[in-house]
Amino acid sequence: MKFVDEAEIVVEAGRGGNGCMSFRREKFIPKGGPDGGDGGDGGSVYLVGDASLNTLVDFRFQRRYIAQAGQGGMGANCTGRAGEDLFVRVPVGTTVMDKHTEELIADISADGQKVLVAKGGWHGLGNTRFKSSTNRAPTKTTRGTDGEVRTLQLQLKVIADVGLLGMPNAGKSTLLRAVSAARPKVADYPFTTLVPNLGVVRIELERSFVMADIPGLIEGASEGAGLGFRFLKHLSRTRLLLHVIDAAPMDEEIDPVEQARAIVDELGSFSETLAAKERWLVLNKADVADPEALDALEQRFRDELGWDLPVYRIAAIDGTGCQRLCQDIMRSVELHRERLAQDPDYQAEHKARDEQMAFEIRRSIEASRVRRVEEDDDFDDDFDDFDEDY
Image 1 (cartoon, helix red, strand yellow):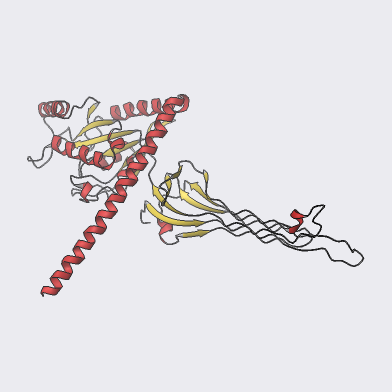
Image 2 (spheres, rainbow, N blue to C red; image 1 turned 135 degrees about the horizontal axis):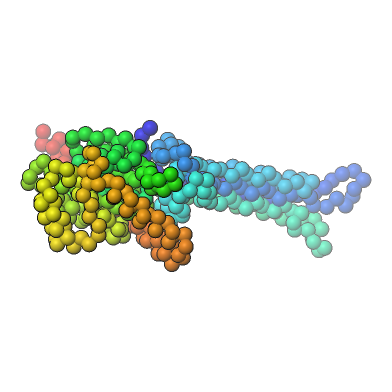
């Protein structure tokens, strides 16, 4: 199944049924009076989290979702049937935003979580509602109101505790294979990973966390180089980032510190809030690197980039150093979960940070789309000029 993490859909709630104007007319009942019933309410549209889904590909084929309208009222004081609500299943981890108002409607993060995205129209009133001592035969009714219509932008962000960040071929997929049962593709060429991969890292029977591996980021990603920013949003949900560095590059002209600096700059261009997230440094391929060279490289990171967070040396190919790294990650994740459950201030701060990050990510993605459109227009103009010359 193709991995699709963005989609745009239109949801339309049902219209409310109109009220009925009717009078009771039966033999031997000369004073029947009004008996027009109310209409039924229109159906609403809900999005429901479904853990069995992992892509938004279905929304590429069906883009409009319409709930059932309410039935009109009838005589004999019969109320019209209400329209059935429409429940649209989306993957857990889907962020829902209103395209026109840029309002963050919901962040669906649990299986079965239900979110109202379009409210059904109200029912109209039958003429029975308007009878009074001075108006014995009312002819007034009201029409049902229209249901809400919204254009929604859906963004799927994989739910993980830890995200792997780094250049292509730094060893991120190898690390994920070493510490979990996930089996992402590993090869000796760049951009082996084309879509995000998830793996569950199990420390003990009831202690585990989820690690996410995304395609490598390169310098110039903000301008569309490589795979650009397309998958960076998947790191926004993580508690912790692991910046994986190739400590022993085959090309001696490659400077790991400069590569790391470029990644940090690109991350800041995408989202300053995401760039400020806690990030640990992981020096991979330590088994083939000279220990003294590793000491010097680590010192350069601390001096030139001001790195004051933990630094780990591992060899993902054989698992060296991975156990200690995972144990420390588990403790950090558990502390985060505990504070999130018990500290209201920490919870509010976390929520505010997520909302700010969602806004910055949306702004970056929209800017990237505009840039691609402009580039396509420039290409068309150049092609027209070429066609006129030849």
